[in-house]
Image (cartoon, rainbow over all chains, first blue to last red; front, side, top):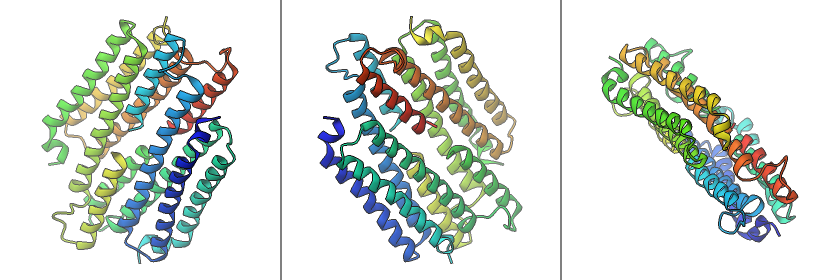
Length: 92
Length: 92
Length: 92
Length: 92
């Protein structure tokens, strides 16, 4: 079973929250709300998608490439740990 | 009338396309599709949101701060032109 | 006098620190240090350059386009304030 | 031997080019050059560091975690291939 299947409910809820943010932007556009407010809503959707992407990438590394905590090859485990660390710095 | 109101139809269509991409991700999660495919769908939503954000920021500069093509203050027009240029390099 | 000239000493010190980080990466490569450490050094240089870029963009808006705190045109001041706010969200 | 050691000469040359870009920014600050030009130099350093980071991450995956082209575990090879693909979309 893939990590996404295991976390399906949590991930679907998160994607729905993102859809909700986009629906709010659509309503704001319809209501001619001030641009500054809409700009900030779009920028925060980007932040939320960036966060989701970062989490999915880390889960993917652990579940489908190498898990630093359980891999029986110490060099691969070390490589995966370094990769996860740099991704966190990078995708902050 | 704000630039967003002027481009309302176009912007709403674009936000709807983003919602459609998120709905597709939701269906893929429901159907336990391979993680790699879902990961790429999420990464491309991020790219699309980044593109939308960059366009809205440029429109905002031109419509609510200073338009390099029409501003009557040459220094401000120059400053706005530089700002738009660096934003394009940055938000590519 | 441009904002960069006013802050010249501070900015040059900051650029020198970035150069120092790159010199450290060069030494690490020469000494065949572990990839994970070098990867993290490069990722943190990127973070530092991102931070510097964000500050210079905000200074540029205030000094060469419109300063929300002093501009005599209320709509432009509002537009500049919104722009700075979204840039902070975006360039975090 | 790590991938960074194998590509040492190439990587050191690339880091030196980045240092050269920073030295040019330092000279531009010293000479009070126009802010727009300096802003763009800093934004392009960020682009260059982003490109270097992306390449090092991919090399790290292939050399220290799992190489999609040679790994004897098909699921891990598939996972690594998906990871590299999403990183390219993400770090573009």
